[in-house]
Length: 484
Image (cartoon, rainbow, N blue to C red; front, side, top):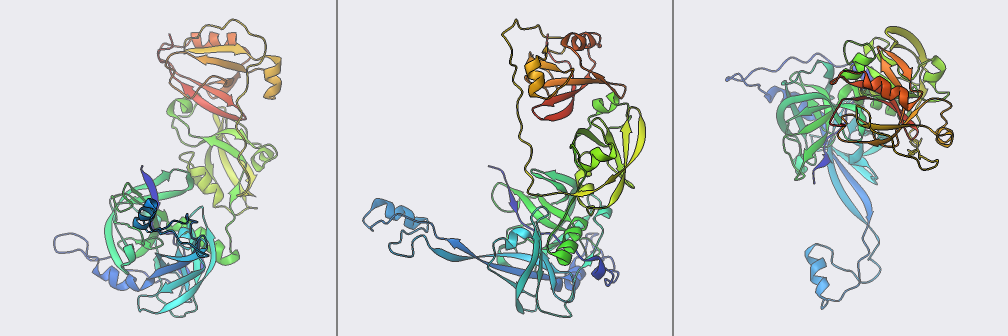
């Protein structure tokens, strides 16, 4: 089974401390035109530290077996010798190791949150062999960042770079403690930028082919100038070791988290109360946009900041203040990085024109549960099933009971069945709310009206619909398949 294994960390330096960083000269090239990393290692090696963690874990309660029992040998071979007596099932200490780096001369250190999770004691070991017991100032699981503090002064510290200036193909290096081997340097290139990984939409990961292994967690990713541009946080592996795919958290994302951890011990994030989806090329054309840029709003939280400001379902958010929103994945990253209570200006595309809307950013509550998804039932008396339309959809008008169940006062057409191959996000039980034509929605009032509209489409034409599934609304572009 393919797994994402955590490896490196998150680095972020306080803005206040960054002002002390002197310009770092570019590295020299080797005789054969390849980069020479020797100067970088000599300058930055002392800024990287080892992070050793002691955690208490509960010893599994094992059956009390005698040495004559055939299962005794089984447990012994796997290092789980059954213990009789009071020790069985009690707590014991286990140790793990990671990496980190110094961001200020007075002892602030950045590592991964997963390195120090549930730690009873954290020990930091410097390159000059000095050891300190570290205090965990705070951790942020969403960015996998933890800020440590040791009682030391006049320490060497890293220089902070700009990950936006990184180019795919550029050389980068990591220094850390893979498999317990301190101050190990590995090198590679930037393989891609802005990677989205499963279950994490707030971090635009930097992908590299730098050799990263267990124990590198928390160590820095340096550019050729010797500046930290990221913290390698994950590896993609079938074996648990390096396979050429490593992912780093950009240092600017890390800096935002670390600054807040240093200031108040936790991280707050902004929200505006919208649900969004990716804008396809076909959907962009339906909304009257030349390019598929922006985040399509498919739901607005009632009484949320966006609703109070006048954001509507069907708006396409193109810009936040002076930052372009090139895709739907960029909007949450931009909004969550804004301090709650800040007023921002959203540029939205609505019915063929741009509109500027000011919105007050609120604070996201991590503990808020996501809305429960519910499928709408058909209800009503049995009736003869309608024939599929041109796209292979079997449609019917909503009954009063169905309309009441989904709180739909008027309009709405139920998708009873999907016949053949229909290319697009649609399934039985969905409700069609509107047809998008030239940037404006046409309310779906009846099955006959929708079928009539679809019948007039060219054979190869696509159609963008506003749909409802359970409690969620979304937009989908349907293309003809073999629905005939």
